[in-house]
Length: 144
Image 1: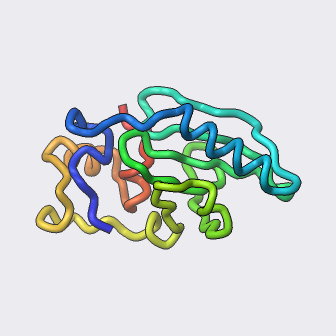
Image 2 (image 1 turned 180 degrees about the vertical axis):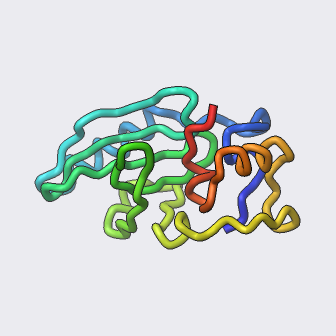
């Protein structure tokens, strides 16, 4: 996957912020359509470059991440200070007009190939400073 300028949240003035209410409605559609599913909470906090929905489904706590500046969705298990990305292809249908990313994509090691990725110089500096190793680390970061 090619990372575009602004995807980290830095140098992103040219990108349009995604709507939290639309994300909430998609999550509510999911939990009302799936058996044994419920919303635990929605989280929308700066400096995070993503919005979160914490749901319970089939006895499992699942965090759904919606990128704040791009129409990308990721599914994860929340760890202490990070996420373990998961693949949940059966849930993709609840997020129309969004690209649901697979764990394989998000855990792909980030190549420091400036010709391939179009991140800005500021973003590359943050990648180095925060020691971001994977595509998911850059896309769903909490850099400040």
